[in-house]
Length: 242
Image (cartoon, helix red, strand yellow):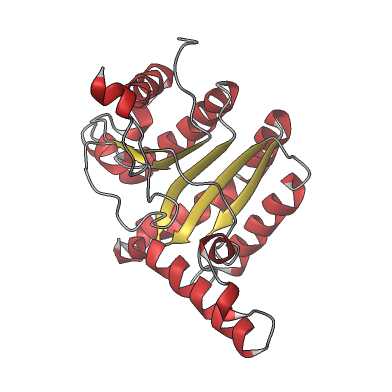
């Protein structure tokens, strides 16, 4: 572990490659998702110990409903089947969990599981894990806009006061901007993930499938992040002239 690395405030993961990890080993895609789930817990605990305060993970997108019924059902049931394990882990690590995404198309059992996790972990204030489930970046922006229109029409919001900071209050959760976005498996696209929050994020696309993305792979991501020159649209004239 290198203590001289830059530590982001908010890390986001597009969890990718679980199915291919399993297929290449002659296993079912469901086995890959199980291994990915195990790795999320281990990796999350490690990341928080590195001093990072916010983690967002893209676990199920609105587009994932296009997959086979068997795979979709497995992913839905995985959350409920692991409820006790998830809660034990969150209480042990003092992690505040919340879910981002639309609640339609989710079963009552899944919704009750999500609500229980959110309620039981709401007391924790130092580590935040944002699980994006049935999530889409376009959907989040549309849903926020609808809430704004409703508040403007009801007189709760003066449209002239709407700015970026105000708009963020209408997103699924008011999160700080993403500093580093990691997509495992080598795919180089963000797939409709946290479009608002990733506006100035650094992107990192390792070829490693998520079940094999462990502590050392994450340290390499931090090393790459440290090498980046984040200017947010400006220019560091001291560096330019040096």
